[in-house]
Image (tube, rainbow, N blue to C red):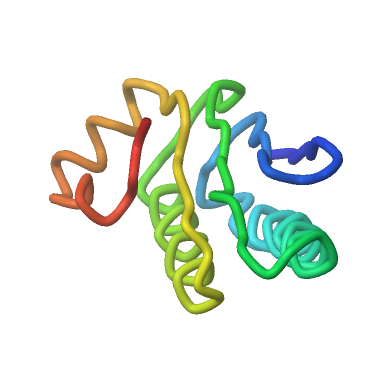
Length: 108
């Protein structure tokens, strides 16, 4: 999985595979991009705009990838940041529905 960001950061794009074999690199990439978002948000204003995570470039996902998204949502919540997951692949939506997690992950 790779990430790309737009400046100023309000959207983080995830690309590639959200799978068990890449969980460590996925979390490291996410944490780096999220730090940039928080830094820019604090510098620009006192109120943060929602952070959009674009999933349109995700090619494959498994339950470990779903866990990564839950971690992302939890970390954003701890930092009082609204987060939206945009354009999730059908496979991810199916996993989230089977796991009853669609209410925790805000898909748009």
